[in-house]
Amino acid sequence: MEPLRVLELYSGIGGMHQALRASGIPAEIVVAVDVNTVANDVYIHNFPTTPLWPKTIEGISLKEFNRLSFDMILMSPPCQPFTRIGRQGDISDPRTQSFLYILDILPRLAKLPKYLLVENVKGFETSSARNELIQTLEKCGFTYQEFLLSPTCLGIPNSRLRYFLIARLQSEHFPFQAPGKILTDFPSQEPADSKMSKGPEGWAEHSSPVPTQELASGYDNNGRQRPQKEGFLFKLETVEELERKQHADNDLSLQMLRKYLQDDVVEGLSQYFLPLKSLLRYAFLLDIVTPTCRRSTCFTKGYGHYIEGTGSVLQTAEDIQLESVFKSFEALSEDEKLMRLSTLKLRYFTPREIANLHGFPPEFSFPDKVTIKQCYRLLGNSLNVHVVAKLILILVG
Image (cartoon, rainbow, N blue to C red; front, side, top):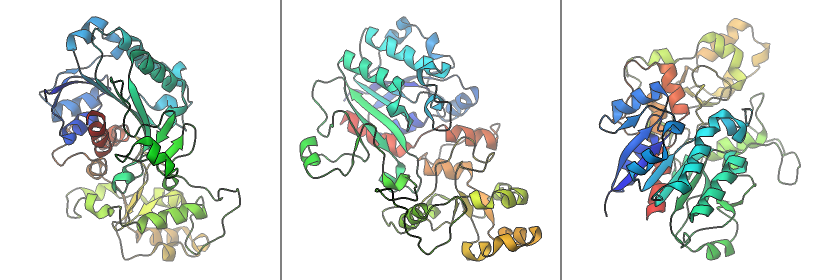
């Protein structure tokens, strides 16, 4: 097939570009577009021959879009207007305006693209911006399917639940298509009707919850509190969350974290160890994993700067049991607490390790001038390469 001409919007550090390469589909990025200067430095560092426009999307005219004559659009619009912890400004948030501009331009293009892929956070699926997207796609004659997927679907030990939409300019439906519903796993090749007749696994109503492995609650489906089970619970941890962790660590379909870690002898790892003051203050809020664990929480752009809810930390002293460290912890003096916590040898995951979990290849790197904090921010705003690569294959296949 002729190489597809691909437009990469909100290109960031090039997650979509890496996914396109990983898919093996013959294609070339005709232009990448992003306004983040640090992200653009990383993009140019890794893709020096790809044209990159450091400008706002609203600053691209219809004439310029038409001149590119692209076959595919890959894009990850700003997620902040839709995140659970944000203001959820949706289409009223100024950061959504560029996306709405794209939706306005799309029907007016001289040649519509054959394929389109959108990535965003969970929460986008219930937004007005999503409704505008669907209306535009239907107006233009696209067939589409929505997903809520995590890298755990591919055996990757990292929870990063994201919204995806794939669309193509064909009248025929995807063989797995479920109109009005969201897939929560990669589809089989069976028709949607036969899949649906076998039960609800892999399917979710538009507003329904997503895979149980991504959720945490102390109650069952009937609202009853779950019975206590043996095992160490952190202050803010529910019994079900403990069960989820134990289930993930026993799930042999998930890889061990060890596969994604840098060697302990790598120079500079000592800078990633958690400060003692942070250990004492946030001990019960940390999601602590070991190299043999088969899970990690989503790494956000605040990782390494904020501790609570920004991503897992690694216990490098594998012979130490958490239960022994936290036993009768509150009765200890401050010095005794610090002594126990220090035996765990806790450190942050390095940017390279997070890039590994996100599917970026070994040759991907950051320019020397990019700080560790900037690396974390950029990776926290990026995507999982393997998940997107598989969706591209499904879209074009």
